[in-house]
Image 1 (cartoon, one colour):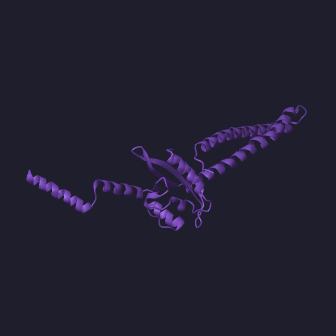
Image 2 (cartoon, one colour):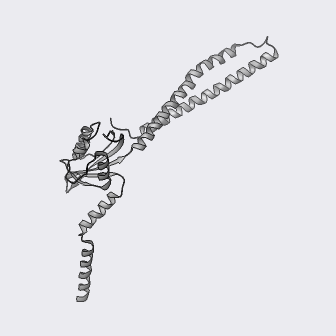
Image 3 (cartoon, helix red, strand yellow):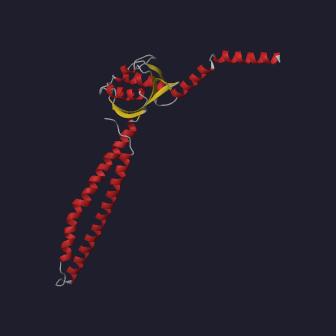
Length: 238
């Protein structure tokens, strides 16, 4: 028994010497490693706006976009206010909601002084310990490419709607007039060649009318699709 205890203690000492961490410290290092491995920027901010934690993507983004080396204890407002379009007011509103217990998700275009405009999706989560708010977890994802894609889809849909409107309204009206006139033409006194030409003209006008009707149906379906797309697509906050 004594030997077993000694082996256990030696093993415990080796683990401590090799890793130099308590269970809590090791868990925190593992958690940080996980956060550092993702693309999204993550912060943990105290209610008085002090940065308590940030992952490597946050450090790298701030260095690139703000030219500053982020440190624990920095005021997050220093970075929020360092933009061309002054987003600090929007940030304060969302952060205040999170401090009051609300989970907030927002999207906004941010213009930096030395970089192109980018679109970010930001999530604010209130964090509690034993029922008391200790801070806000903030996750920021770059959605610039997705936003541009959605904008292109909306632009294409708008162009298609205009084309469909022209085809279904501006073309259909004169075509209806032609069909109406053709229905009134009396072919009794016409030669066989003229009757044949009128028959071809009538048939062509009716075929064109069928094409326009199909366009109208497609336009209606496109309108429904566009409404569904815009309804289920997150829009940027103004």
